[in-house]
Length: 433
Image (cartoon, rainbow, N blue to C red):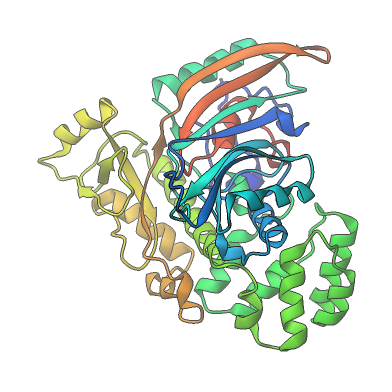
């Protein structure tokens, strides 16, 4: 059997291999928002009747998380930073997740102006704002339409995932902007290298053929003229973040720092994190290509417990390797790769050579993560598990046009991507996820 090869668009983002050798079933993942359902798991904010924040478990249909936070802040007459959430969710989906708003619970009724695609499922007062990573993970129910409906291929991929206790813990294409605009990592690279003008150009300009015509036209005007006023007149109103940057450039021409700070702090950090994610993907792929595997300990590897946050990791030595391997086999530990930053340690030995070779080939200087031009988004980096456990994996078949469609259900830990699981089944183009 010829092992499937990922499409060039995935390879460019570091997703250079598949775990399973079965043929892909192809298909489309998000024909309807209801085909991609996500429910955040874990305990919500602690109730406190005297608290100054309103906690709400919110169902969103076809809403990008940051855009909802911005629109909700406007509806509630809050600053954007007064709306908090634990994890970013996909736009073309039906999602359920916790938010906090610094306002009385009764004020949440104002969110009705955002339409029927926003539903408050539960709300109460709480003392503290929610924070990034406060959830445990996510449950997914995902329907693939227009596939080959090859049940044997689906069963083979399920077997491979179960045999390997999970999938490579890649960051999925949506981490980098998805099919429509895959450049968040390039914006992050520009920020880390201190080129704020280039970061603005990439974010506001740099038209791509996958976008809507009016967005391409507006970006082309900025790309060719660098005239923020002309571009602002053309930008669609739904592109709120770009318009905010342009308004600042109109008021203070050439002040790139002020312009990029139109973005909330957490979104600016996401750009830097996207660059780190890009590097991580390439490191994991290079490790696989070097024959080191995802669950075999080698001297020089760094390992952590499956519930650790990646700040601390233990170095595998020739003496400890067998003991560590037992922990890996029992699912009580995981091997890690670098999300490079200022202080996170690299691996040593052969695994360390892989990490350093990737960073050298991409011209990465770890000291640059100090982000001197924008120090509030500096990053220490961390270690991240290279194998993502997939829990409660099941496949159901439901009636669809021309036959039955597979519906995949499973749970992942926070920060992991459902599309990385689905690519083992679909093996399709980036645009199909």
